[in-house]
Amino acid sequence: MVIIQARMSSERLPGKVLRRLPNGRTVLEQIIERMRMVSGLKWLVVAIPETDAGGPLAGCARAAGAEVFAGSETDVLDRFYRCQQQYGTEAVIRVTADDPFRDSQITGFLWQEFRRGHCDWLASTGLPDGVNGEVVRASALAKAWREAVLPSDREHVTPFIWRQPERFRLATVDYRRQYGNWRLTLDEEADWQLVAEIDRHLHRRWGCLYDIAAIHRFLTDNPEVAALNAGVEPNRGYRKSLEEDEKWRERHRTGG
Image: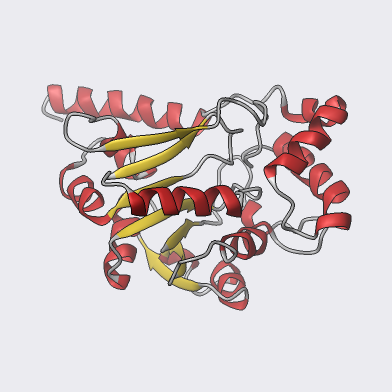
């Protein structure tokens, strides 16, 4: 099962998942099409906030052939867990809708590795930001849902799991930066400029299914394109969540 987390209310780039790429598809449509290429999956679901349930986000997801689940806007872990529970799968590939270049071959390889192993959480490392993927077992997700209290754990779904190697069986597939250290996720306007420029050049030959190797070759040959989002602060959203964690701890220390 693939669950794609999507929302319209991004603070830094509102409506980004429905922006239309040069190839004519929205960002969400492109991600759905790429994930549909992963073999061995029964369900592909877009998990959205209840506030978006009757709007264009849900309509776009359904038109692209995905199921739609609506849940909490702020407690993303709760939305993700309840989505998995509705479909009753044993494990979930987690995808965020601001990663338009999520690679179907890499995702499929992670899925197969997870099914062969005995881990609770499997992730790739060493790939560009926006390409790394993760798979989580339903039983581990359930523990996180029951026990996690920190804002960062509720917003980002899996940190409660991967921060506790003593409790959960963790595994990684390390790509050792063979595809560079580019930023290929979509949070700022500069990210959009890079994403659109990559798609403008590569979709003419490959459609929307060009892989990370093709992106790597293009950015290596065109460093001025790669530099378009060089000034964007990485992991800004997660850092903000960690700041909220400190506020949460302080409130509970003082009994507030």
